[in-house]
Length: 413
Image (cartoon, rainbow, N blue to C red; front, side):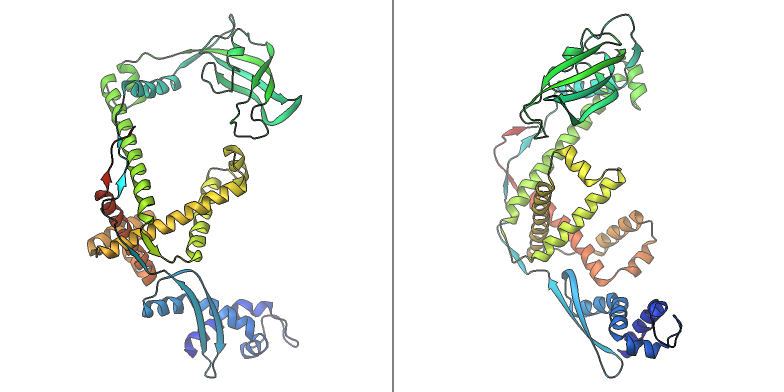
């Protein structure tokens, strides 16, 4: 409508008027009508950008469309001062699915051994060891050695092979090959060339399988005294009064972690087989959108930890190409998996109750620190549809997992 487009033009004029150069007028003083006549394309585009979200949401809402990816738009002004806006969108594909009940999966039997519980307790015990500096004897197995070192391959120092004041627990197998064993018997102040071989499967290809020499200087030695495994230990490291209660809690946590791992394995296997049963012509736009969203989220998580992408790739032994190839696979799996679950929800006639919608809205309001009513008022029809879909996808996943059938148990976690 003319009034709607005029609102956009007014905004575009106010935004741009101080940038317009018109002979005879100072910047910011060009009359709006003259500015529209001389800079029509620029102002029309900015006007459309300003009003587009509202008119687009209205248009797809009236037509009950569910677009994916970014829309493209073109504009033609009409004689009455309004405009005709032509928008091209990619729509979510039509889907169908069959044989989604009774999907086979390999069930993992979950059990917790005494050795696993003891190993976890000992990790906590190690962290709480008391250290006493040793000056009257050489390094023994179990000691902490503080050392400077620099590594060389073929006489050339390699990247990442140098450190100062590094704390190494002898016997922890932190370093490659026999590095730690060769330090046993050295005293504080001693220097030694430690000869090792990098493993064939080392994460840095230029070092894999190669012999190396580390020039090492021992600076300090500490004896580690481990605390007794008794009630006092339990009270120091947990909220429990007795060691038995602490140990039982450790066993329960390991059990729950294994059950979670087993559920994840089941979910991944069932979803992988479910996707094979999906009939849909999925536009590449959906996968590209998912890829971009996941990459942005990943980069933001790294930044929050003070890590840049190249450092992460170097640490994990990946190249940019291998990383991107895996991310594309993940994006495709995510899109197809979600569409398959949406298809199951539709086939089962699943709906979202008002109670389920309100519960989801409560969670969002809490996450974004907003009042529930204000959040609901600010949501577009498309955003409400997306929230409904999220709920349906979770319900469909529960349904598919509940109706999956376990095969012969082959693996013990």
